[in-house]
Figure 1 (tube, rainbow, N blue to C red):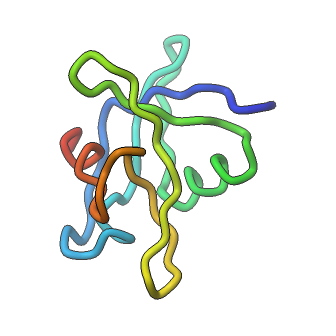
Figure 2: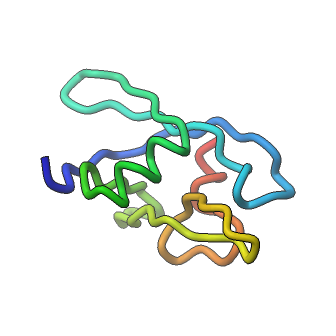
Figure 3: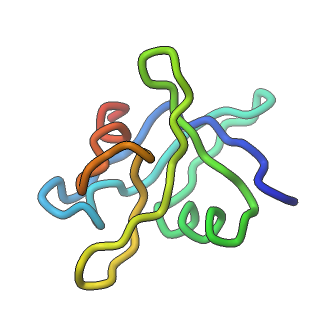
Length: 92
């Protein structure tokens, strides 16, 4: 597999004060198959180029990327988000 696109349409949130823990899991549907991926799985799939994830925001596709906190914790966010994954949190 090489960067198969997966559309995220819902998220489950965690600790909203910490960007690395704000997203617990993401959910979507591909070819009538519903799926859930934990944040660690999403990070793995993106870095290993297994899947690329995106969301729809104001009628545009926004790529989900891996970011890192100053203390080295990886997390996911929309490519145009600041520190917090606000575009993903909007899907909660």
